[in-house]
Length: 186
Image 1 (tube, one colour):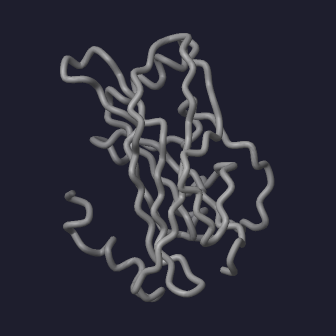
Image 2 (cartoon, helix red, strand yellow; image 1 turned 90 degrees about the vertical axis):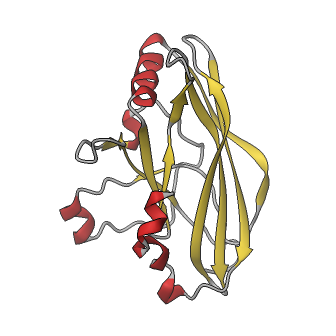
């Protein structure tokens, strides 16, 4: 990458945590999309076809080593009764999602129920910390923030921020953390 070059955030799937065989397209949940409609590149590989990977462009603008440290709103939705029911079902069933930046997988939880299991909350802010080594993306961390209780006929505003940090991870070793069994148990 060169400074300022587009880095693409791809949305892949959502599925219930307790049934990894059941997967759906990310936008099968009523998430809204960003406003950037065109990307500079995407070539689906044979492996993605075989594995059933269904990447969809997030429409969020990301530029290499250009921080967006301030919360940036990218879309709003009004929760219809149907959207409310869909999100509540997903949250009640512990749905999580998988997304990618530069082929690095990132996972996040859609939301959570309160202790009484009566109210559903959704995370509306994604904070990305992206590690780079010279001109390569070598690490991505996601923190979900801004937990909002969902109710029919309410507005939800989704936002994001990107923080780029230099890293000592070599590009050839950037997948090593995914090979550590402890990574998936935390």
